[in-house]
Length: 119
Image (cartoon, rainbow, N blue to C red; front, side, top):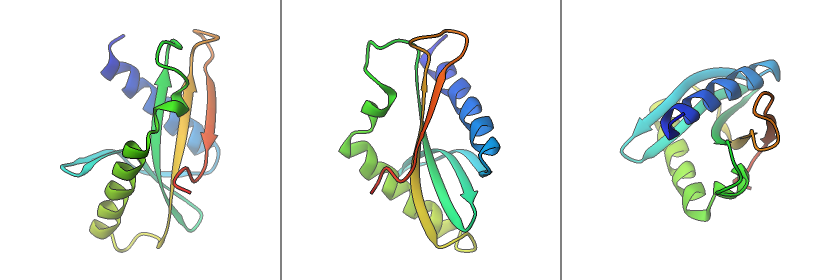
């Protein structure tokens, strides 16, 4: 499976996982010159921007380790731009991470939700 297809597959799993937790998915793969957002959702009165990281092996570390300060800054910039385009959406903003880890099982990944990674 190529990097792009692994990412798309992971985003699909994350969307299902989040829907089961009560998130309402608004948009997938928002991409603009400023950056990209994997999933945009509402959780109650909060607009949530979700970064999805999927790992098939531990060659590049845990999925959570892929969120560098540079990546986080790009996510915040993209989230603010998205909110500017959609002023009708909730004012409360948050960035979450869904980490999908297949390292210990090729059939059943470990899925971890980390809320408010920006702090």
